[in-house]
Length: 555
Image (cartoon, rainbow, N blue to C red; front, side, top):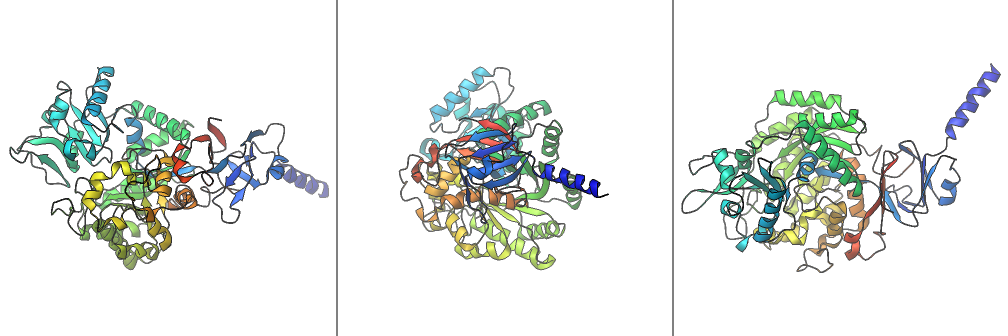
């Protein structure tokens, strides 16, 4: 009996001393772990971090088969977690017309023409990326702008934020959109003031009049697109995402990739809930939630769109817009309907993401969460409000008080995109626009993301640069663009890593570099903490480790 016990103890000792599969050494490791903020090296066994410490300590643990990567003093951090992204749409868009950065009408027309020439067999011309301020006199785009270059095929192109569509005459004809078309949902068919004819511009839900005519991508194409999207994400250091507009189809695609052992991202899906959603819909998505809750794929949140965007005057504001109109925007939900749904979903244990850009919509969202808390009792719900581009200062303290997370996209405050936006907001509201620093000081749990493809870039480095600098990428301030809302590198990096994990209830398994955590780690070409802040945008991710495996290396 004694001999058997000694044998068992010996086996335990051997198991405990198993050699690491991967070691990163000679690094400056920012761990996001308050108990050990900085280190020099990391030991990984399988898909878990097993030790963090000095290079001497960790290197001594290497065995004959341990892969060793010398960081050469480079900065290392947890992998980026994009906490609000539309990954399928962005991935499909990689093969469509990309108008990002084409900021004159001729430049846009040239890109569209080039895509059409290269894709003669595509029945529809689709894409995204155009920006509101890039059209002559900052007008909205028209069908004539597209008809001039494409007449024989339908064209439909989304704005960079996804909230406005641009169609040519052929697309409108196929969709049956005429001067007699009546659209009463959330959004608008923009019409010529004199003739009443549709101009080719469709806001918010009115885009569906044309979108539903576009043949859906096949499952084969969608899976191929996700594979390409994951390759891009690996080069940018993105190791986790939270899909902010999911449905059963999205989950099925991710499930297929999971079963193929092809996932190089951890995926959390929020299920989209349109206005007027019914209890049977909640039951159906509840069954999906119950099925998926593992480290690679989980469903645990619902997504509600409460308003639109500033540029098209569809964001719900407390006071009229400031660019010569009396518009205030109209919420997509009534307060009663929103409060009722949030209360029911909260009672059923769901986490809720609410898209709210205007200050009125933000207040409605907070009121709905507070109402649910009063009815159902306080719990660790981690409800979120997405975007929060404008807020009344009186509402900022309510986030921490209610345990609501501000989920924001620094890339949306890029000075290159805010000319039309800032005119519509006006000087009175600007001091509380993209108020990251105010949220950070208030004690709220701030989380950052991209909103891709409703963004000029999915690269977290671009967003991080904006958060730290609040100025253009060439380092020149843009009219003193709210420097009071800049945050530190550490605050921004935490919002892209540890807080992303917290926002999906996964802070005990990922988001920090500590023993026992999942091995999702990235290395940078520059030390974000030591370089001039204006040079942050020049930084590249040179190494991405996902689930303990190197999936990108450029060093």
